Length: 506
Ligand SMILES: *[C@@H]1O[C@H](CO)[C@@H](O)[C@H](O)[C@H]1NC(C)=O
Ligand SMILES: *[C@@H]1O[C@H](CO)[C@@H](O)[C@H](O)[C@H]1NC(C)=O
Ligand SMILES: *[C@@H]1O[C@H](CO)[C@@H](O)[C@H](O)[C@H]1NC(C)=O
Figure 1 (spheres, protein in one colour):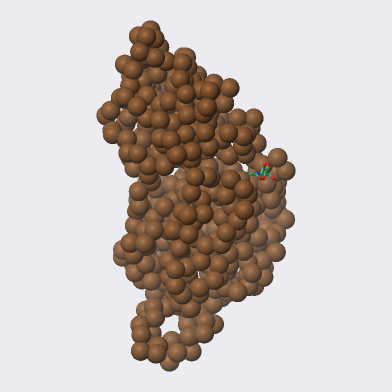
Figure 2 (cartoon, rainbow, N blue to C red):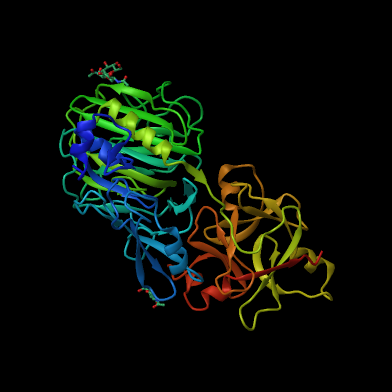
């Protein structure tokens, strides 16, 4: 129980309480506590989830010297101090290394280890998320979410107080309803402690995306479903539940809860309105799901067996002990709405003008006469000047378009091959024809920011915000600072990933 739980109970209402003459809004975990189903894990990079919490929210590590800092709320119960992150991460790259548990149980989320499926790191670990991939505002104050690209995941295989076996639990998460894919599995919740698939009913987690291997809902998705292991459930059994709607809100409140032979899916627009119930009934009648065999590890961004193909964005979420009442969850939704999640600019630094034709010049000493160009599909750097051939000038000229995958960022259309755009593919940049697919659109979307070396812009891949447009041996990549590929080398990363935007040659 939170320090103020008893006061709140005395007042007997959910949305706030009066203490010492000032209004102190109860946080989501205060509300769960009042409802008799306290949080046993509370994770958020955006805000405190208890009205009295002023401790660690998350830890970031910067690329310049590998040091870390902890981001806390601006005040007890408040929004994260994003400015502290911005200062710490200025002119370098930053990763989220720890998402702290606010419940006091130490159920922190850290870099997920490899499981049945290995992550992309050399030792099989999953990647860490960029600290800057998911900027938002809460009540007008800037904060950062956790942007999960395929290959990224967090986990705690030794959590305490989480539901085990058939024990009751609840959970919610606030997610980006527009960031998803069909890969398995962007999850948050209860999973195996071994990072392997130990059978039906060994998980109970929120899933969000368009995976259709097991269950589907109405329309073409994305859907909120329950990952109960060896099945994503939109309703009673794996299969279609027309009551599970496609999600279209920018911010999504996702709820899964389960108790013996009963479970539910509930959802809402996190920015307005109330929860709807998408499923509320008995357990699947397939062997293994009744009773459940929950193991009590906590996952974020991955499946229980460390399946790492999902993508999505997490802002906040909790897990409870006991099955929360619908009324408690309704008050939590009201609290989330009152937090006023809203979008924030995805770009910074010198602005690009949509429709303009540009050149992109390298800034690394010794390479400053080279520009981003293409030779067929390959994107490279070439020495270009006013006396170059018309063909080369065109190869080094790009038209700025609104981002195909997110209009808050940009796409770069080839001047000499209309309809073809710079996109990343296996983290190499290519010029390819826009095939209209969601995958192409996302791979062809890049977000500009103040440059890492102080010259021009740096340009990160929208779908992999740890990865920047970077030249290496005169070829151009979507590279991370110190990652597994040769072209990810940390040496001269900031210079190789900084570009001066100029008028186009053609
Ligand atoms: C940071 O740590 C990585 C991995 O241990 C290492 O490769 C890299 O050189 C370090 N960077 C700095 C600036 O110390
Ligand atoms: C869910 O089902 C339970 C048990 O039938 C019922 O008490 C509860 O009111 C239902 N909740 C909703 C939101 O339909
Ligand atoms: C499980 O549910 C399906 C669909 O309602 C039904 O056809 C089937 O007979 C049930 N199986 C068992 C073992 O109850």
